[in-house]
Image (cartoon, rainbow, N blue to C red; front, side, top):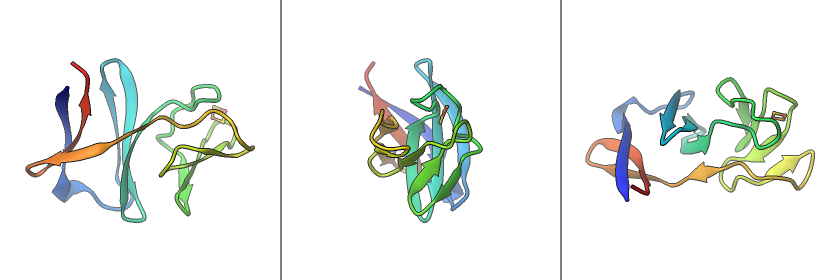
Length: 103
Ligand code: FES
């Protein structure tokens, strides 16, 4: 496993969003309502990026066709049970937040 530093902790605040590509996977680091999330930046419906998605009450709404997902669990809430949002567990090393990925 290898730690990939993404951002300095001091730069995170509500409304923060930044795209990354790690190991060929598009990812979105975001902070909303005090919670920091790292998700695959590709909707499981038809692949739309979440970069401009609305977030409220812990849910992110895809700008493509309006599907809604729980950020904490990845579960699809609208239109109903369906493919989940891919989430990545974050970790911190020193003053950096990042993610561990296989080598
Ligand atoms: S691409 Fe996200 S809801 Fe269709």
